[in-house]
Figure (cartoon, one colour):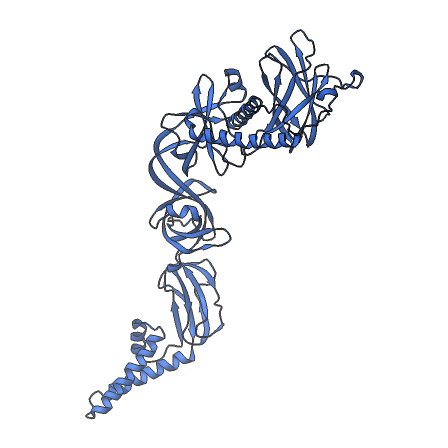
Length: 524
């Protein structure tokens, strides 16, 4: 069989092995094997950590529990006037302002308070016409001509109605009738109680019909506007109460009621505007254009929840690590529902009372993936794939008989100095990069292997797998070639800076295969 045919057979076996692993994992999740269905493309395996290892990585646990939960929706509130309690003062006649009784913005007024007086020639003429009509109607009151009495009465009613339409009150009409002469300066009164928020009236100012002279707002209630994300809208309803706090009144909290949800979303922020009605305090400390923090608390009843820090979410999968007892940690796929402040709802995959990892789980996840990768490498060897190597591995130079050709002793690089050495079974193993400092890109990794007496171990099959402790990172593999004198070298491709976990596997004829994990720190 040619080399090309062998390589194709090996690639086919790799694909078949991956399918078998994924199907086995998905069919028996209760055994702790998690499928590799996310973008990482590989499985996870149970791991074992002793007490010292758990303490070093800061492992903590939490319980899966069923308890009452509530959804908290937070937004920033913008204070504004209650539009229903804002009035503008305008005139229906032209004229000239004579006296100002409310002469600055911010002045509080009550309903019926005088604002200013106006001289209007049209209004004076209308008063004179009214007095003449009244005098004519009185003179014809006992007339024998019915048409004359009706005409005089009709003219009086029309004159009176015109004055009323120009906002003269009944009291002012009675005063006009009593005095018997027109009033040159007419006083204009405030239509509501509140605060003057805009003032365009000045003494001697000529005014025209429809011109706004004052804007008065009643601040007894305030409207608060907020924005709610579209995924939160199912929890928001008219009539809900919200808690509003202000950073400059830390000891005070205000209760507002949601009274309107606007019908359209903002296409840029994907939020809907909501409006709250808030009763102002007696001293009116709440003012338009303020900002406050708004919280809506929505009770959702009892739910099965797990601490939010326990869930590793890749976007397509959610995984937790169960405490299997005696230091054993088992990965488990779960299905989640609503997210809360410090908890996540679990709809499938966990039972009440389960104990899960709540911190250090990223390190646990990395170790789990490395363990799974080691299992894959072991199965590759079992099915005759010992000669398969990754693209990142440097090819061995072959000597006569197809055996690896070791370089001459004079050309052998020295064993790594200062590298941490670990006892692995009956061996002493150290790992160090071929160049310092270690940087991104392809880097030679040197593995020094000695027996317990300190003698170099040659002729072993050395390989290693490596990955970074991050969700979604794949596991790379490389074989190391024998450089002699117990030194083995293989290539690693580090995609980014940071700590990388590297698991070395050493196989010797007639000996048990050993593995050990090392941490390699990669610079920029």
